[in-house]
Image 1 (cartoon, one colour):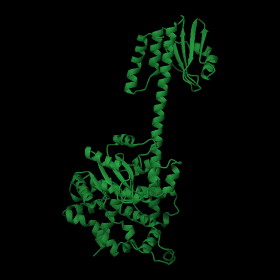
Image 2 (cartoon, one colour):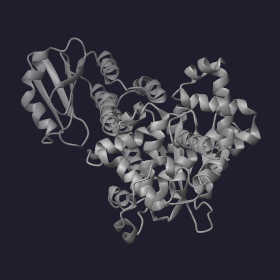
Image 3 (cartoon, rainbow, N blue to C red):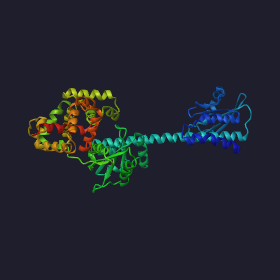
Image 4 (spheres, rainbow, N blue to C red):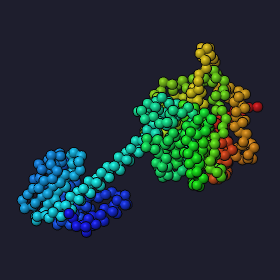
Length: 492
């Protein structure tokens, strides 16, 4: 047996590497063993290639040992002793998984039993460290795979495809998909905290109890939490909902936006609501806000006339590839770089598809008014169509201005803008109008109004709090503002 002093020294070699959780360098152990035994040491990997060795090991020794190494690696032998010229060689296969790595010890002098036992101990430790690395790699790959599955489930729900989401989980269906309704809690936190939070609340199945936590693929500081609700509208997973609120309470850099209660296929609607609520939460002392919105404009317009306009408006791109339509829909709600990351395509690809849509529709998608009009047309076509008899009737195609001149649209616009009239003087209202005219460019807005960009940003933050809409990131908040101004400017 090795002496206690030798074993203590071996542990001292291992301790700093294990405790610091760094790469466990086999070379260090091999060099240490060579010094202890006064021998040359080599580790041959499972493929038969030299992995590490001491400096003075002659290459021809391993070449002469090739038949023995093959037998050891394949499991035919556990250990073997050979003579290569003047060198006595001891070989030992490591581990049980075939093919196996082999530890080779060569010395011109006979090695004592204690020396051979120490070499065997080092070989065992090398194999243990190898397994630790493999386990760590497997754990990382599992976490990455689980994250991809969670994101895929979320994206299927965003498309309203609950059945597809179930099929994508290959039998390991998350409890969330058995719920009828959900709320989305959108947590803003430092990007580095997202992985830690996901791991903290993750269970053995890779999900989060009855909920689901997903890194936002577009905004690095957003953590999306989907929580199922019971029939009374209360969270089925009360613990996770309470934990999210506690995180915000205890961390001044956190904020939380909470959607209204929606059916599971309406996850995209809940996500938009949570984005609006988060914009409000960021400007409140509690940094937590629930969504209290109004019905969307698309659902208030006369159904037959709205469908006739939307179909005519979108007709030039209805034959476009599905990827073009998907990119267009996403680009109306997220930055182009975020769309590229989300779909795993280049930003140039995103730009090319959007240019194709622009040319077909005769729009400038850099203009928020064009973006709002296209968004409205897409939202109308996403609604349940009119009944068959209504579709069969030849409805004249109205103009968008005539649709936005209906009583329902005017009432919606006045209600949308009313908080601006009650909560501020006219300066915020004027800044918002100038901001739309300037293509939502804060620098141009500031120059046109003769104020600082900081003032423009401050007015936008005030408007977000009053309107309960997200305005400083691309999305439905800006589209609603464009429509409200357009309706109000034309209304009596």
